[in-house]
Length: 241
Image 1: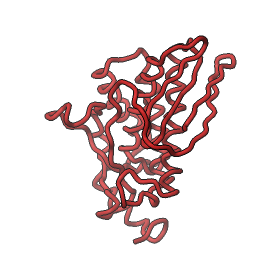
Image 2 (image 1 turned 45 degrees about the horizontal axis):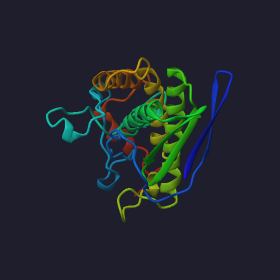
Image 3 (image 1 turned 45 degrees about the vertical axis):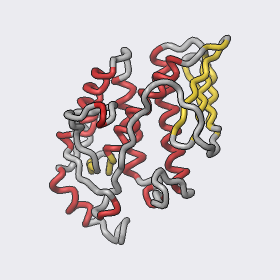
Image 4 (image 1 turned 180 degrees about the horizontal axis):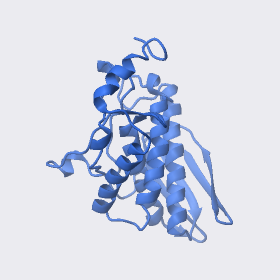
């Protein structure tokens, strides 16, 4: 069981994490974020490589494609930035949405005395987040961000040891790639901002797309039409095959 124990000390919330792989358990109410396919930062059919255009990342949607058949999300794929290296946009979007989801679960969690416990499933993990009953909005968002960051780190650990969301398709070579770790940090940064004020779903989607584009732009990204050639120059330097 993945258990998050939270202790309030002054204005800080400390999150202690323990994890173990379990079968999928019960799901709390509310739609979970859609599954997204990431990219590896080098060309190739099996790398799912795609060059994302930094100026074409909006709009962002939490809703699944079935719920918005005529609305197309902004680019997926890889961006290279001068200030932060490679960024997998799908992982940034995933981080944004899971922070929103965890925040909602904390807000709706039943209160028992001085604590509240939010329960949900992340991939094949049963997750329980234990927090003080009284949380300010800022504290709840910060806890949701901290929890999401740890869950995504767990995904990197589990895939390194053989877990895969698609049976018989290894994800090990994508474990701890720098484009994922950077994307998680960027997604958390944006989520903290857009979730303030408890925006409704449509407002959340609009703000997320706008702020994601602005954040990537501030990191001095390479245009999409130059990315594949740039990645190719790194062949046999840090990737091969």
